[in-house]
Length: 79
Image 1: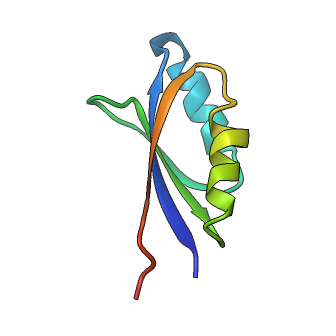
Image 2 (image 1 turned 120 degrees about the horizontal axis):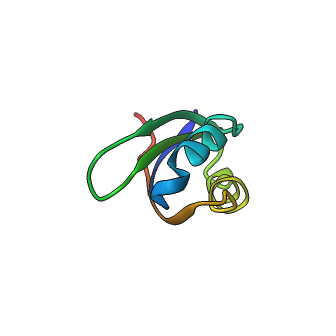
């Protein structure tokens, strides 16, 4: 069963397009949206195991130039 996490991203406004395109190309990220509000981008991580979530976030999301901060919410397993 897949594990999903919603990653809320604050981005340097000058780098929004770059961050969006970079996140769209990351394996393990199923969907990416530009949004309005306290966050600039929402990325939906979908992986096979919970242990993969931190790897995707630290190695592939936070490493993108222009990301200022992230907040992650991991979903409960579906019954």
